[in-house]
Image (cartoon, rainbow, N blue to C red):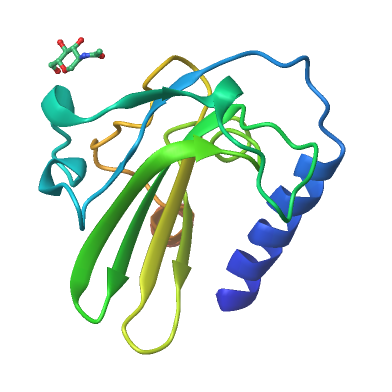
Length: 153
Ligand SMILES: *[C@@H]1O[C@H](CO)[C@@H](O)[C@H](O)[C@H]1NC(C)=O
């Protein structure tokens, strides 16, 4: 399973390289839950700043790349959830263009990460809806396949 996640990341990083879209500006919620608990889910925008990504600084390791999307990162480190919201520099929105899906990655030592990107509207990085991960889609299709098999046989 980890190999699939790794390949997803590689694909997203590579696809970012050849995307030179006209620069459009998007505004994203910008916060981290360790300094503002309202940044966590369920998201409460009342004290959270919204940032215009077109005026965000370029990243040192990504010269010339503009932030054109929003992202939300949910990370579990040693049993504790952390949330980060802000502008995104790399990748494509959602997975295969579907913003309901996020990249998931499970590491060792009880580390779990979910990385969601979106571009559909200003402040789109709120999403706190239940998210179907590629893993559960995979499991559900497996179950459907088995059910279909037993019905047919
Ligand atoms: C903040 O959240 C409230 C309630 O969900 C919503 O009505 C409002 O439009 C949001 N503010 C902005 C600037 O999006």
